Amino acid sequence: MQTSTFIIIGTGILCALLGFLGRALLGRFKKKSAEREAERILSQGRAEAERITKEAALTAKEESLRRREEFEAQTNEARRELREKERRLSRREDNLDRKVDLLSKRERLLENLERKLSARGSDLERKNHELARLLEVEKEALRRISGLTREQARELLLKRIEKEVEVEAAELLHKATQRAKEVAEQKAKNIISLAIQRCAADHTAENVVSTIDIPNDDMKGRVIGREGRNIRSFEKATGVDVIIDDTPSVVVVSGFDSIRREIARRAMEKLILDGRIHPARIEEVVEATKKEMDQHISEVGNQAALELGIHRLHPREIVLLGRLKYRTSYGQNVLQHSAEVAILSGIMATELRLDVNLAKRCGLLHDIGKAVDHQMEGSHPQIGAGLARRFEESPEVINAIAGHHEDVEPTSIYTILVAAADAISAARPGARRETLENYIKRLQRLEDIANSFPGVERAYAIQAGREVRVILNSEKIGDKEAVKTCQAIAKEIEQELSYPGEVKVTVIRETRAVDYAR
Picture 1 (cartoon, rainbow, N blue to C red):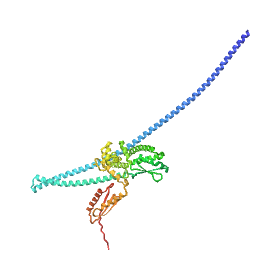
Picture 2 (picture 1 turned 45 degrees about the vertical axis):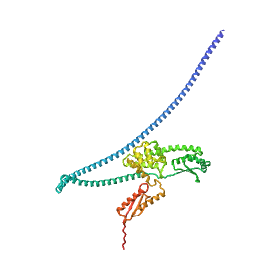
Picture 3 (picture 1 turned 135 degrees about the vertical axis):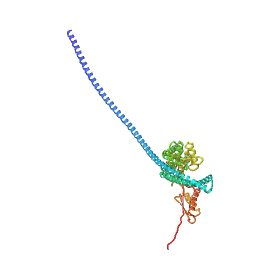
Picture 4 (picture 1 turned 60 degrees about the vertical axis):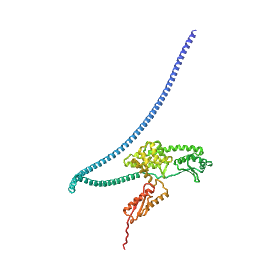
């Protein structure tokens, strides 16, 4: 009994010891596990912290680069604006310097004129006193000699003085008129010659056909189509003639309407490139090409206006200007001619200190009526003036359009400038094409007109018909008659012939004496 009690107590003590040891071991194991988990969490935290730190550093670097680029762009833009402002200021300073120089010259001129006027005034006053004294002396002498009364002598003397003054005034007026004409003519020649020298233009020629390259003869057959249905559909859709002959690798599009011919050329090139050629496809491509052509015409007109610095044009005016690219006059492209006239008008306006932009606008729009003259009744100046009124152009532009061929009376100087620039552009060598037959006939007619006058021995048309040299018989025609003959020949040429520019008539009269020393 006692022994069992001891066994039980020993067993309890042993179990307690074993439980204590187990709890101690378990606690130590849990502690180690917790330490390992803590180390794992700590390492993950460190890795995550490093990743977040790297991402933050990368983001900060990207933001820094972006802000640096923005700053550099803003800095470059500011520098560009600053340079532009510096250039503008430089130009303004140059303009101000020129104006200051001009004002200084004018002030010196005015001072010289004032001194001259003052001297002339003093001289005139002295002469008036002398004249009054002489008049009194003459009046007294007349009263003594003629026995006339004071009133009768005064009336007689005033009539004589009035006649003398009229003669002197007429002479002075004639001299002043001649001097003014000489100065004006010389200045006009200088301005026109300067404008011609500063304007360089291309030679142009009129074409009524366009050629299109095709890759092979098989494509030529596809263009023709079965029994010619494709080519008939193409001609109907475009309004031009298509010529396909034995010439290899070429299709010819013919038509007098340049816009239709250009639409046909572009449409044919698209069809050849696409390869699908049938009536429905032809109509589709032609319609799309027409829309592209309308856009192209607007771009051409807008580009011409921008190149000349002309703004605020009506959209319809821009379209009409673009159509002028496909309009020719005697082989000269009308849009190039209009731009050339605008440049010449601007140069002459600059020399005359007029409104350069207004002169250019008048020159560019002067032939705008030619864009629709085949659709409306009337001459192109009348049609153009009507369009300008509809587009609310200024009176100067309307008058320049209507009067550049002297159909109406010019009301502003810009009309005269446009007319002169138009004549220069049309008359320059190579600007307009003339057939050989008409050219020869004009030269022959010039010589015939000169030879028809009495006393003319020989006449020669030289410089492509721009000058006629006339040799006179010195025994039949004197020096004074030679001048009259020259004027009469020039007047006859003006009435009988049509020609660009002017024809110079040079009359030569010489006396030759021949002897022999034996």
